[in-house]
Image (cartoon, rainbow, N blue to C red; front, side, top):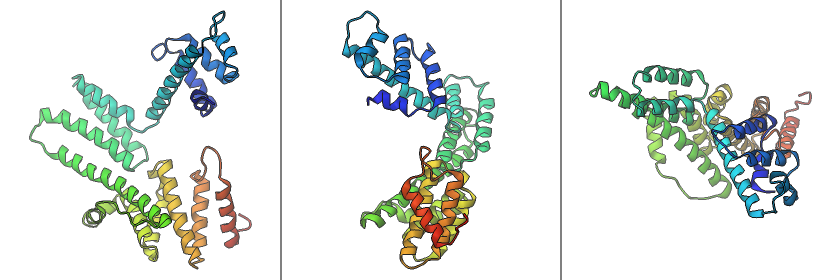
Length: 317
């Protein structure tokens, strides 16, 4: 299967319709043969290539290189479409880029309303993870650049930028440290990452633990580093189950897997009470879809859920 066939097969019905509209828009594409190729691939597939070429270029001698170039062009448009879809679905992406465009073009009268709209959009959406702080930092940067011309002596915008940068770094670094610690456990590696002690000082020496995303990732790390202490597991579990809307799907899936793997290791060590915690995470993951990838629950996860449910005697469930 070619790259473009793989890409098209990964699109759902709604996305296929949107992509065709995208191809028909002259702003993005001016080649009718590319639209025809898309229709052929959706309806019939590529093979045989000669028949596909005849549908695109009636009466023309088969030219495999021309067909490949047309396919390549369609693939490029598909990749841009996917990027556009991702941009549209990223909270605050449009507002952030609009602010930058307005400031760069000197449209000062437009900036206050655009800034207000950006802040409102950020606060309305539920995410409060590293991606949120990263996007917020971009908004704060545009605001600081705009205000520096008007009040050059005002340092509050730099303070906001600096404080927000700490949260970007902490939430990202804590996640990487958790991933690294998990690998160490599985592969028994003694490799270390830099700034682990500095992270501890930053978290313990400030009010950063009041930020849920920081606290959840921090207690996840401590849980992995000190598995014999149930204190860190409890400090991690309850906020995670209560505030999982703060994270995106990939992040919450990672957090669930860290928790489940921890609980499974404790069970294997003879702490059978952790079967109840395993079921809590499985139930939450099923209810909210975190354990489903591309519409599928893996057979391994299904087996583990059944095994845990039998251990906790939740037969009706």
